[in-house]
Every structure is written in C-alpha cells, then in structure tokens.
Length: 269
Ligand SMILES: C[S@@+](CC[C@H](N)C(=O)[O-])C[C@H]1O[C@@H](n2cnc3c(N)ncnc32)[C@H](O)[C@@H]1O
Image (tube, rainbow, N blue to C red; front, side, top):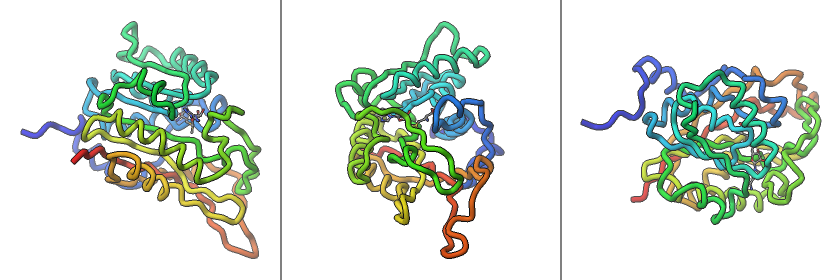
C-alpha cells in the first residue's frame, strides 16, 4: 500500500486544499523582525507536506525562526540559516516564550547557523545533500523594505546594512541571481520528492511592476531539479490597515494584499 502523505484527517485535508489560505494568528513577533511569517502558517504547511516526526525541515532565510518553531512543535528536526546574528537572539527568546514544546525539551532538534546561505561551504557544513524533506522559506522581497511605502505610508525598515544581505541588492537581476544561488543549494539539500514552499509577493517600484512570483518560479526551475506543483494564495488583507486609494483619481492601481506560497517538488527524473 502507498505511504500516507501526511497525518491530516479527510476534513482538514479538504479544508487545506482550497487555494486561498487566510486568518493565521500572529504571535506578537512582528515588532522584533520586520518581515516574519506566523508560526501557524509554517505549521499548516508542515501538516500538509511533511510525513511526521522523522521529517527534516530547512529554512535558508530563517530570520526570527518561525519555521524552526513550527518544526520543533511538531517534533521534527530542523536547520535554519540567516545572515543576521540579531535574529538568532530573537529566535532564542521566542523559544523561551513558547510553553514547553512537546518534543523540544532536552532533545534539541534545531540548528540555527548565522551565515550567508549563498555560500556552498557554509550551507553544506550544516545541511547534508539529499537530507531535507521540506524547505519553507521567505526570502527578502528584493530591497523593497528599505524603501518608502506608498500604499500605507509605512516607514522604511531594513533587515541590516550588510553587503551579504540580499535584501540590500539594488539591481533586480542581481537580486534574482542571488536568490538562485540559494535555491540551487536548497535543490541539492532536498531529498528526491522533497518539497520547497517559497513565500514571495509581487512588487512595485515607482510605476514599474515586478512579478516576483513568476520570476522566482523561473529562477528555481532553472537552478535546480525542482518543479512547480501548486500555487497557494496567502490572503493578508486583515494585516493591512490605513490603506490609501492608490493613484486616485488619475490612475486606478491595485493595492496588493496577498502573497504567494509557491509549492515545488524535487523530481530528479
Ligand atoms: C523575509 S525575512 C525571513 C523571516 C522569517 N520567515 C521569520 O519568520 O522570521 C528574510 C531573511 O533573510 C535574511 N537574509 C538576507 N540575506 C541573506 C543571506 N545571504 N543568507 C541568509 N539569510 C539572508 C534576512 O536577514 C532576513 O531575516
């Protein structure tokens, strides 16, 4: 008999199979990291794409560690990488805040490495090739956080001033190439049939629209054995407030309140 894909009941399988996901609880982390995703989002992804406790989880842009927390809650081993040591401290604080993860305890199953995820030597010193079942990650959205936001007038915030931070790359093509370097490493790290869930959103700089989700699909497929299998829309409308009517009254412009969860699977043959 074929092996089960996950432990979901039929009811939850159906619920999670709808292509729009929404209403994830925030855990109060947004003040300490400028662009974290909710732990509950990573938990839902793992419930669909990971088989169980024996699964190994990776996040090469792990930030404040939401992916590692979700894996720890589920009793899975996990590895996270981030260029910014400050975010590792935030992750450690978050670990302390969660009340006794079921399988966290003394049996530490996570590893957080402060390094440049593009560097093969650093990457493969903590992640073995063909060892990962599920990679969940949210790269910087180009250098957009460094810029003034017209939709709700939020102040610019950046992850760091580091040249190794790919969120500080000014050229879109160079940013995509840097993303490709990391995705190539992820492709090698995944087991055959393993999953990558890549969280991105489309961007606008001035009057130019950049379809980052579409360009990310091209980059991932060019640089690895990963193939796009699905697209989930993450509806974030309730996270946005104080929105302005963009372009009013001269040009109608859409306010983006959704992100993408691009689901890739490694297919060697
Ligand atoms: C969108 S945030 C990820 C947030 C994370 N999902 C969380 O919940 O906290 C992107 C992260 O990529 C990191 N980053 C940027 N360039 C990097 C690089 N070259 N190698 C590893 N991490 C990098 C940034 O420091 C930032 O924390």
